[in-house]
Image (tube, rainbow, N blue to C red; front, side, top):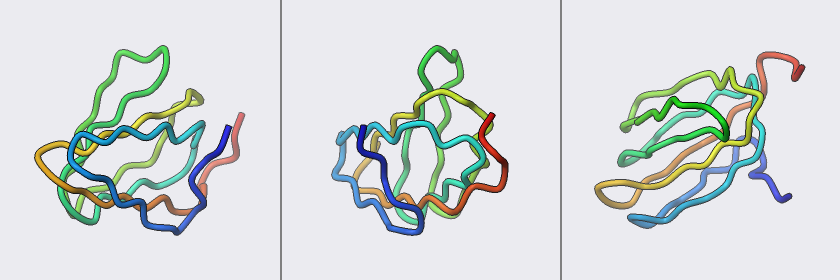
Length: 83
């Protein structure tokens, strides 16, 4: 599976969905717009708006979708070791 390289901005058109792969420990930063995040086999659905970020604590593959318009997401290096 192809995964997004760290520190590379991912520009998404409104409604575009991208599978990010397993990112446990990575910091996800929404730089523009708003994105919906979901994780395989996980009931959590999260929304990040511009200026918000989170540390991915899930071992599952993640998917992201731009909502409300174009968005930009950046993945930063993993802070936790993958289990």
